[in-house]
Image 1 (cartoon, one colour):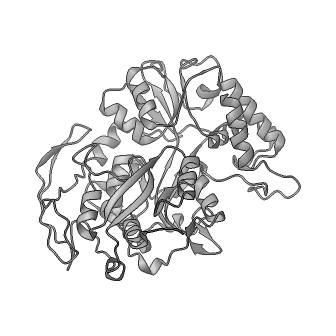
Image 2 (cartoon, helix red, strand yellow; image 1 turned 180 degrees about the horizontal axis):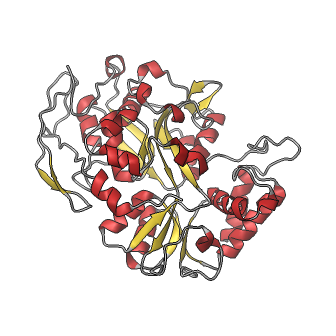
Image 3 (cartoon, helix red, strand yellow; image 1 turned 90 degrees about the vertical axis):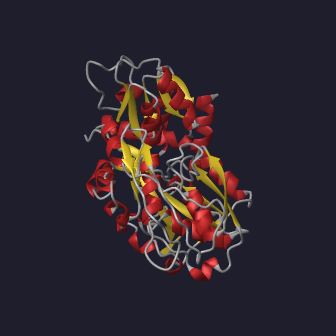
Length: 425
């Protein structure tokens, strides 16, 4: 068990301060953009100072990215995409974190973001044909590829692709038939958050506090409100009831699936909150209304910055998690601006910013070489492939068992949705 020390992560990783853009008007890639940054205080309470002059093109820049001139020549002037909250910060949440404005200045592509709360919502939004792209987790990407909602990309058009960790490329959730269907964004584990006062006698190290009665959190458990959470129950059963034969929490035959849903029914007696909006769980953690729950690192970071007495851990059983991918819609009205965004968000500087803000491992290996990022990458195990061996990235369940079994049929995701709706009714 590796315990995430969030306070230390904030102090270390947030030392990297965003250079503020000094020109309010959009500039072309051939114009110079001068930036200066003064003293800033991060959420971790560390005062840091940065100052520089940045040239938008014609050499190395603080942003470490130059738009592809062929794509830039066809830029449509705007891009509309669906994203997880925190993936496209423009400084309105925290003035120190803004990677949207530099992109707009470098490309003249105005960014319009629709935040999605769950993968199911993101799939529905993309099926509408109104968006140019999406930041999708594995339980959405496979549905989007299967439905021809997204298209394959040519890595040669994206300068950032070469620097993406090889362990994130050409995976089942971001490729098809050997072709990449997007650019990996980053990855993280779904953690167990707990109230440090409620667990003053000892920090929990097991998901049992989420599923078994008798813990300090009983009656005040916070659960992620999505059918994909069935996999969390399956993961716990995989460790605690080996006789069920579960080897992949997304590959469940009917008996295994029934055991997972029965466990979730038991959990409902312990839960006080089901959340989809991250701000809902954040508020509950800050108020002390919930004492344990499944969480994302960004929620922990924000709640701790506001004084919440919490910490988080990846339990001994392992965890579910995400490996997100930026994907281009097959119906994109602004494909060039979307391609530019995908390349930008995976570039070293921008990728480091979102990794620090959201609390995740960056996808770009060069990000870990930037000032202030070495400790962040160590904390979030960006370069430690062993850490990810027991993190099960969100994946869409299919009738064809993903664990390789051919003598049984597994429960497809549509039935996960039906079962979750029944549990929540």
